[in-house]
Length: 221
Image (cartoon, helix red, strand yellow):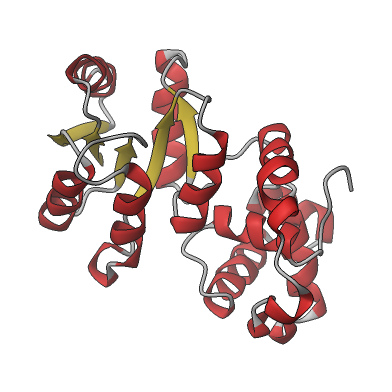
């Protein structure tokens, strides 16, 4: 059973999302929060598997709330999925940097939202290659870090780990990475976890941003 916390200041959105999630036998909504501060408090109390987080909210916005949740050692297994109107691209990049696992539109089909929650709980980064390239091109590359500012840990990656990082940034799953590199899925998963540890990344989404910022991958490559 995947437990979910809904954080949104609009009661109609919360009710609609709760209804569609509760209709799935594998999902359980454990709580609702009306702002980011309450969301952080409930996340600490309930330790849900997934937090569905709005961005624009009173008291504490979704980006700051995501950062607090992802920084909590006791919430290391909790994943944040951003609910967006897709009119907030610049905010999405900030949310991904804060540790969010991906984003889903509020206008998405019910089954898409259900699949997104399950995918994030399974450890997948919910970032379509097309959407990622668009965000990177508009909001990451214009403010890319300099070579001197690239995390020193990047130099500690082995050649194989760099190859895996590039494939992660291209949106490849562990199984697809295994196929591409002719290794086992278990080995691919181990590489990804090791890369996340070395780069202090909370989620695969942060690896995507880092791969572009560091120049390992460029849009269209």
